[in-house]
Amino acid sequence: MIQNVYFLGIGGIGMSALARYYKHAGAFVSGYDLTPSALTRQLENEGIPVHYSDDPSSIPPEVCNNKENTLIIYTPAIPTEHKEWEFFRHYDFRIIKRSVALGHIAENHRTLAIAGTHGKTTTSTLLAHILQSSGEGCTAFLGGISKNYNSNLLLSRNPALVAEADEFDRSFLRLFPEFALITATDADHLDIYGTHAAVKEAFSQFASQIIPGGTLILKHNVDLQLRLRDNVSVYRYAANVPCDYYADNYRVEEDGSMLFHLHFKGECMPDCLLGIPGRLNVENAVGAAAMALSYGIAPLEVKKALASFRGVERRMDIKYQSKTCCYIDDYAHHPEEIRATINSVKEWFPDREITGIFQPHLYTRTRDFADEFALSLSLLDRVILLPVYPARELPIPGVNSEMILKLIPGKDKMILEPSEVKGFLRKEKPSVLLTLGAGNIDRLTGTITDTLKELNA
Image (cartoon, rainbow, N blue to C red; front, side, top):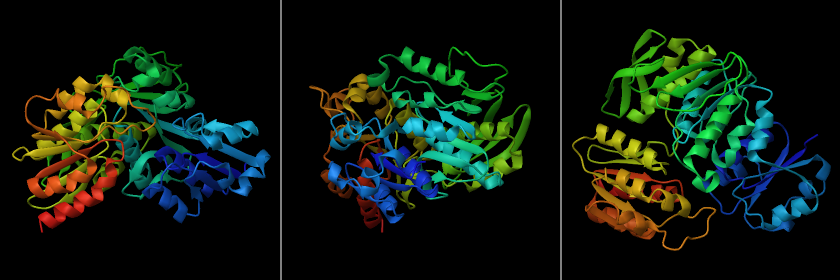
């Protein structure tokens, strides 16, 4: 019987959701993380002890003295030389990856899994909201903080489980869903996969794990070699391409929300309102609606939930808006995500200058996609790059933000340190500002918001 669960890397978005789950299930939950964050502070406020020094003596005695009833869950970002991890391995504790823990939980549910190299966090959060709003209810492990529920975990006694199926480290291959959606299969995580072909093969393997009689929903342009089990139904979805599920006649409302007609299996539900901005989110909404309708949620319940959806922190997240200025923060860290986000903002503000601040994430991704980053960022009127956020990686000689900057065609562009951003804003007073990246750029959002409020008071 598991009485204690200890997390190595408890502050990660996926790890913190699991920590909350086990806490709710009655286990003593504790953990380590490298640095304090808003998430770790929230966990501590919820009664979960967290410490920030890699020191086995800091591990609670409830964990150390009860090995037989303790489970250790770790994130792949933890280095092998980590002292606490070495301690648990030395004393033969039961140690599993985050993906294995999620897989075990999913075994007892009707799993609806959202996979894809981008779009999965918003799509899965939207799907969870539709199930909650309809009264069906679900347990959900989300890759971001839902603004409707102020959490990355939803709990329900009903059998539905919504899971964000992460391709990093092939984690999603621990899931065997009844319903699965794949948003995109672009080249990414090449430090793990090596080639784009290997990325696509992993997604094919994921699709092959849908249980017999299940449902696979693919974005219209996803091209995979499918090896499906018996009686798995396959449907396509798109933002504006006629197929099984698609949207048309969409327009951007003044506040950024989106209005569109939703088509599904020959029917049309007109004037669906999506409570968040962006053409890219219309596509995410169609995907979430396709999953919900396939699961059996009534169309009018889907429509109601789309209108009441408030979005996800760091996904087209409006931090400040006035008549003269709009500031949006987004997690986009892949060239395709950046392109989609910028184009969505340009569609909302076609006549205004758009400034973007981008923090490249990982040296390997910067090296592998420098040309593509430059092409996407060139859609901006003004480009500011921050230094590369290394995350789990050591520096690679010659790989830095300058590598991207010099590839952006001649325009207003520069590299700034985070400490210089406030001064830049005071000088330039941007009309529309985007912050982009998956590193710690989010730690600037409070300062940026306060500065813009002051400038536009």
